[in-house]
Image 1: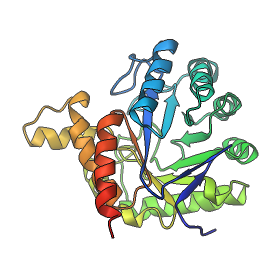
Image 2: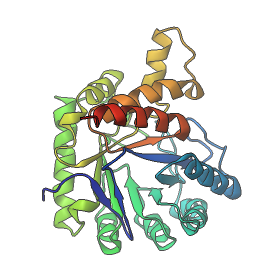
Image 3: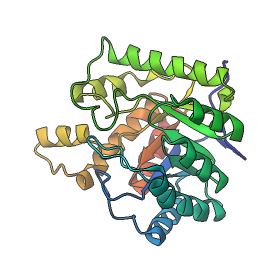
Image 4: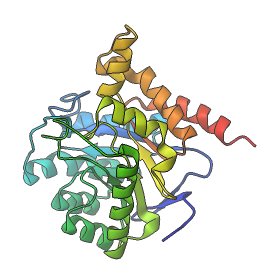
Length: 285
């Protein structure tokens, strides 16, 4: 199952991390996402935003129709499909590499049929139907760690050793999905910053990212998350989600230095600046 983690094979194409860290831009087609809920719920606005992120340099545009913020309420499959698939179809039709952020196999199947290349599943591909769909379609996949679910995950997260526990979970899920037919080169793993983790858990994971991937491509999503607000509040700085982009940039650079292959962000322009700067330093030899 080992391979050199420089190429991410997707449904119809491949992306390389040989010369730069990949940047995944976020399009939330939701009413209630923690940072930008409601801004892109209009279909045309979401499509324009996705195209804009690509123009700014995003390698991937990640489209989601159900909020996964702490305490978020679930929506049904039909509503999520209606929100997501037309946006995916339009962006993929324009030539963008599109990821669908969903844990529902039927939504994933519809999005892949509409041109999506990647399934980004916050539940770690624990649904056998989702694994089967990804294996059948040849999609790229993101396997994320989350303790609990969005409704409960921040109630009282606890670990024996958060870094070891998350790394072990991801290794087990990789083994399971490969045994079910997903090609190893299609897999990226994500420690799930902010998903069932305390402030201290998030810092521990970011400080030891090099223990997480274990030879896998690694995605890190810190963008505008609450732990950054805590850091900024302690420094007496503005700390609303919109005030966290510079702090996000710091985590992007540190993640690149620790071996991240993909970073998932709201503010693509500044994240690319941070990532390319870190790339130049880390890759210099």
